[in-house]
Length: 295
Image 1 (cartoon, rainbow, N blue to C red):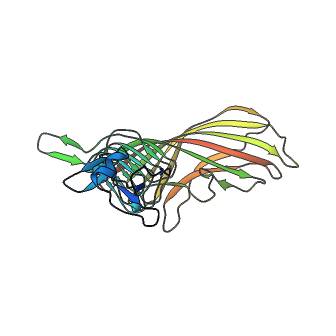
Image 2: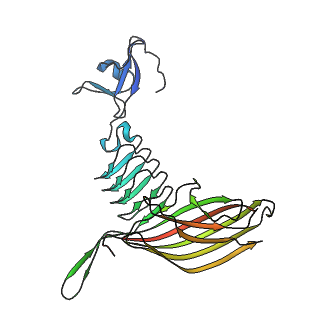
Image 3: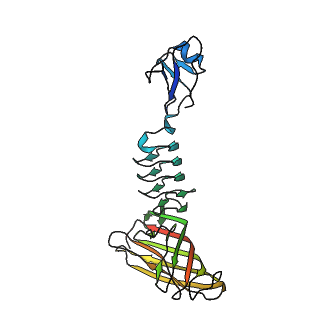
């Protein structure tokens, strides 16, 4: 806090204000001192006679958290934040912000942001899940019950749409997988027992190279879907692919499986000519159904 000059007739000066609004004082040598009512009120603060404390404001416990979940605001009931999450805003009910992530936003109910995914948002609805950094999600709701003439069956699933930005560079004809936010290593993580429809807009900008022409470009739209079974086997279907605009060549683009043994994912794979320097950018919209029933 800004240094405050000692008032005439008093030996203590306000030194710090806690997250809960409690003011502690200093005498110039020692810190963390508790002031009496006269001193507290002389500096414009409120004195609580019952607790013997001086306060700068009345704190809302729902909005204040420990240093392990720094700067996280929680407006609602049943929300949770695990250790290591910070700089995040939760509005609604029964949402969970997993640990080791930051700069996230959740609005709605029963949402989840998994561990280690930063700069992401869930904008509404219920039961969305963030599994990619920089992802912006709108959720599709909770469970559904189907009834026939003899019985009723309840199906649990997550239904959501989201947008993710991928980018990368190529300098030769090597087929290259674009990465989330251009970080060089992250792809679009996927869940098993899911159907993902994708709508991709891909821009390729030539920056030069001995066979390239700076300023040439291509712009393409690809739409399709991928089925991911319980064992993470993937079946891709491309329903639409169109070159929208270009100056020069097109290059090639396709959605592919980029899974490793420990992390299952997909991405946009791009390729152009040798000795051409390209900047690639892909805006990917996903329409996702994740079944909690094995298929």
